[in-house]
Length: 232
Image (cartoon, rainbow, N blue to C red):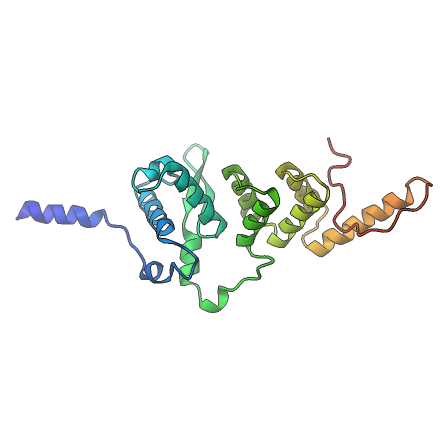
C-alpha cells in the first residue's frame, strides 16, 4: 500500500498544467493540434529545466520529423505565440530560451485588447518579410527581427518601412535593413513620418548639389534614401 501511494505521488509531481483556455480557444487563436502538442512539449521541457530544446529533441516525443518541428517552431514565433529570449547564467554567459508568456497573454488578456492594427502588429512583420524575400525566414533572421522588436523596441511600422526601403533600393538583405534602422535610431527617428521627412530632406540636398544636366522627372523619394552612403 505504501509503495502504491509513493508511485501516485511521483506521478503527480510529473504533471504539467494545461489551462482549459488553451484546449477551448486554440482554434480561435489560429493554432492546430500539432502546434498545440509542440507547445505542450515545450512547456514540459521548460518545466524540466531544458529551456531551449532543439527540434531533434522535440521530435523524439511527437510523430513529427525534426524538419517539421523546426517549421512549426518558426510558425509559432511568427504567430506571436512563442518568443526566444536571452537569459544570463552564472558567470555572465548568455543563453537562449523559449518563452510561452506571449501565448498565455493571448489566452488570458481581455477580449477587447486582442485586436491589433494589421499594419503595425508584430505577427504580420514576419509574414511581410517572407513575402518580400520569397522564402521562409531562417532561425537567425527570425531572431534578428525579434531583437529589433524586443531589445531595440523598434515599432513594427518602422521595421516595415525599412523593409520597403530596402526593396525599393534593390538591396533586400538583413544587413542593409539593420543599417537603415541603426541610422534612423542615431538620428532620433522613431516614426515612419519622421523617416519620410528625413529622406526628403536628404534628396533635396542631393538635388541642390547635383550636376547641371537636364532636370530629371520628379519622383517620390520618400523611401529612396541610400542609408549605406558614406559608410564602410
